Image 1 (cartoon, one colour):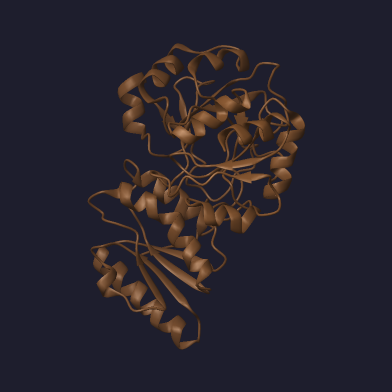
Image 2 (cartoon, rainbow, N blue to C red):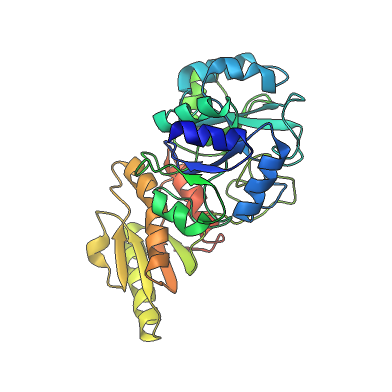
Length: 333
């Protein structure tokens, strides 16, 4: 299967594949036509950059103008893994792949299937998440098939991914390095390696008129079909407010989904109540979030309510995705 996937990619076709973060939709990163096919299959805006995936460190230098010392340190600490770094691109990378930008986002996934496929494909695979643009990213292959069946040549099924949220993106073309998308590699982890790290202020803002330097910055992402609202505040008040909103919506004949945690799901009554995990280990919440949003779509939920989460560590990534999924519709108590 890996060999066949490599053949398809080298011939300009598209293959969906698992990574440790979410499933990716791969094409030849150095082939402009392949990148155009990715945009078309996803219905993705062509100014939304793609991430180039490599499987070994020596393949970085040919596609970037320089590798800053801090990038070398971060690669040593976190590659292979869920970290994407942005560099000034070399002429080998077509502008189609980078969304028209002179920078390129690069990642080295730790998933064994992904690494073997990238090697079989020639070393450079451009890949956004393997979903229809704007939908929750797929963490299992069945949702890839739901969105992309008939639009791509192959889906490699590697089971459920282990992290569940997209990679952290850090811009290394500025100093200090700047986080453009939070993920499992947290600001605290990055700072331990390279010192000061800043955070782009558009991450938690509703919108920005600037061109996106990284996937997910400009457009509404990760969104379920129904309306999602985040309720933020004291936990007791949040539970009471969500329960009241759920009751009101169901009385109007709507199907209601609630995202709680192991600690709170017993407080809720709705059409569908799901625990995202345990607040003592927010990595469990990251892993289950997209699955829950997809299941709410499967179940036909009209409205959904979610508790908010801490904004430290991986909680920053969870809230970033939730806010985008909700179109920044948040009620603060």
